[in-house]
Length: 57
Image (cartoon, rainbow, N blue to C red):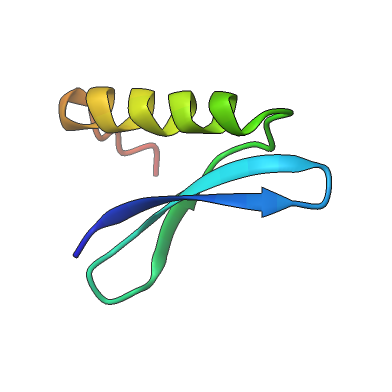
């Protein structure tokens, strides 16, 4: 199951996206509040389906 997780860091909160195999696919910056991290995860979830893939090799 693909999921977003909100976690506590030593200096705030962050989110990460985990794949169905448990591998971390990406993570956020550290936010000062849990609410901000939750909003960031919700934003990433909303816009990711429309994101382009650009090959810069």
